[in-house]
Length: 239
Image 1: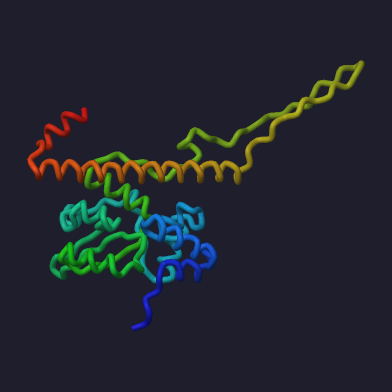
Image 2: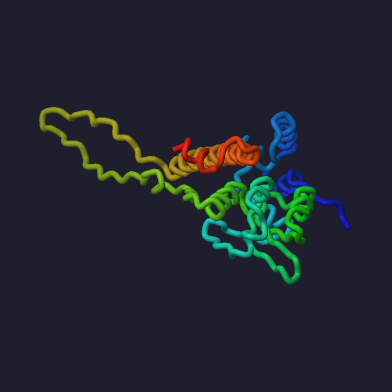
């Protein structure tokens, strides 16, 4: 078998990443930890959509749109929520007869994580590709019943391309008045830039809230297991 290709190598081959950018992201990852794909997105080197499509093309792995995807109950039951959160994967299908669990992942090149996932699930693992933010939203929506935001559009933020009707300035008979400057309507590229920036801010906030929720659930589980307080008491204190 050939050598396994890594995420950075695939993105460079797809023309989405330079070697300098990859080295910078790897240094950042070594400093702060976390997954390389998330680091690349946070540093603004690659957007999630381009990364997903590049991985799909280069590795011949199908993609899945999780915002509109409805998983079957057996698929959700096949993978515990804490495992899904730990490895940032979402179960899309399960074939118990063949002991195969298919999960959405943002990095199908991370063979070590997928092997660990197979061990925890007790099933063989198949993969499809999705963005990390859509995976996290799917976990919160399907396991925790949270209402999550989908990808932003100009209308999401109340932004519409402005339309102006300009009339020629009146010209008095005695003197020609200097017309006042008229603001030009925003260009489509500027609106797209604003929407992309706001979308990234929403995604970062959702990721931060999800991380805090996971920590809180972990603290509650420890306190409950040690008999410090019951789950009902902890929930009542938080109201």
